[in-house]
Image (cartoon, rainbow, N blue to C red; front, side, top):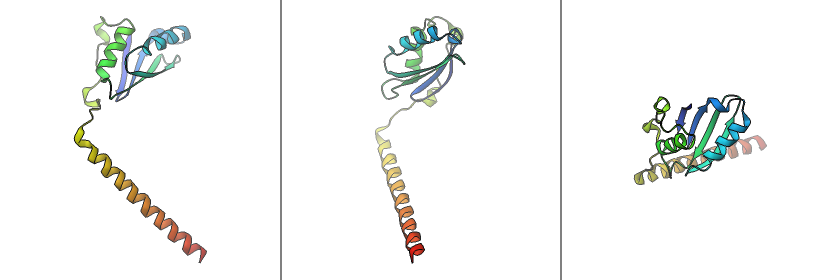
Amino acid sequence: MVELAHSVPGRLRIRISSIRQDRRSADDARAALLSVPGVTRVAVNTATGSLVISYDALERSAAAVWEDVRCCLGSGGDQTDAALPDPGLEYLPSPGAEWINQAARAAIDALIGKMVEHAAAALVRAVI
């Protein structure tokens, strides 16, 4: 059975009982998952029977990747593990959100500038 453990934008953690303590099955699952469109990396943990699937969140949604993962691993028809990732966790880039990134960069630059000023002033005081 394939079970979705959790999801954040760009990453799914799934559990597959059949790969626990079975390196060959884990390697087969990893190879199959790397063929899923948008998947960039698959990390396997045979001790826990889990895989972390990294994917391009700008290219594919978590729900689309999850559906492809289930089909790829042969559990497409099994409704017991059909839970989809929370759509509230999806990363949906917004054209109007760029100003937020610019404002954050400006605030960080200002903060670093102040830190450098204070460090320089403290160094001058220490030398004098």
